[in-house]
Image 1 (cartoon, rainbow, N blue to C red):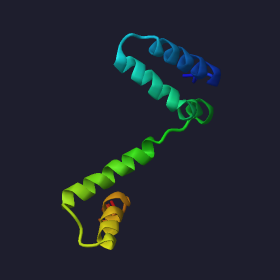
Image 2: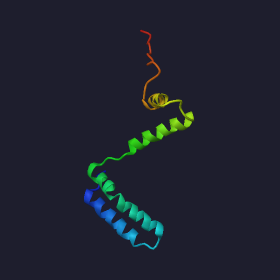
Image 3: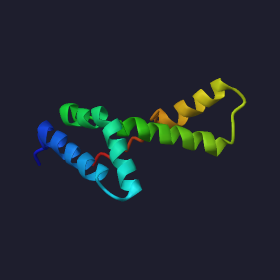
Image 4: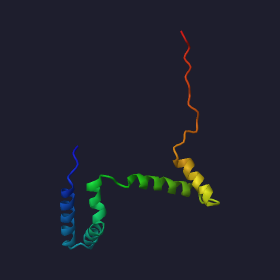
Length: 102
């Protein structure tokens, strides 16, 4: 699937902001102003094709570790828990299947 060109993103955002600011509904006007404030970041996606989804996912996992523990004695224990839960370590030894020669 082909991605839209950057100019299409710019045009679409400009249209959304224009229509939103001319709305009579205050929540829509506020959303349009929010889009305008974040215009540079939104348009950078069309140039670089990257998002911060990976960082948000990792942050969510770290927050889950913090909440599950209900606090840590010190910062080093918290960092150790983050490495343990989010580090992707293989804690179990690899199993080896021994075939019977036949």
